[in-house]
Length: 191
Image (cartoon, rainbow, N blue to C red; front, side, top):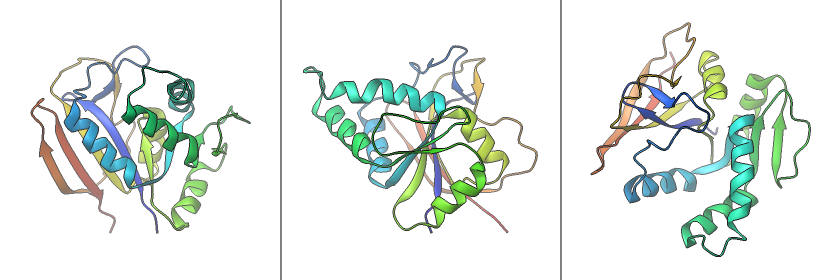
């Protein structure tokens, strides 16, 4: 059975985005964090996005392939994204022109659980805070892979929101990078 993994960047005070949409420039993204993200991508069978994050990815990554200034790393990631089966959860999208995209428009928990039953590598939620909140509230996330940047934002979109029941976690791994970013990898403990 595949797992549903949340990969999210957060500030020390628990915000995943500043007050404005796409306010993520504060993330301590250096070569160590890039290497860690690459580890996660290699273990990903399908990236999972909410609509807003999906549209941001769709608006950026396909353009990398036609940009002569794109790095080898970015081109490789763009090729992977174009070829991999992407899952987008949206109640408003009906179609998309980005290849290999599956849209889940209703029965989200049931549909995600069906995908988890399929063979292959894990499903990984990249960002997508609103979707992440919903899936946390419904106890669907099996692992949390968090990168904590050494910054206090004071406001923004919180990592956890409207959680009604405790979520028990087991620490699997932690690392500290020279930038001061800390990696925390937890598994959800279900009894």
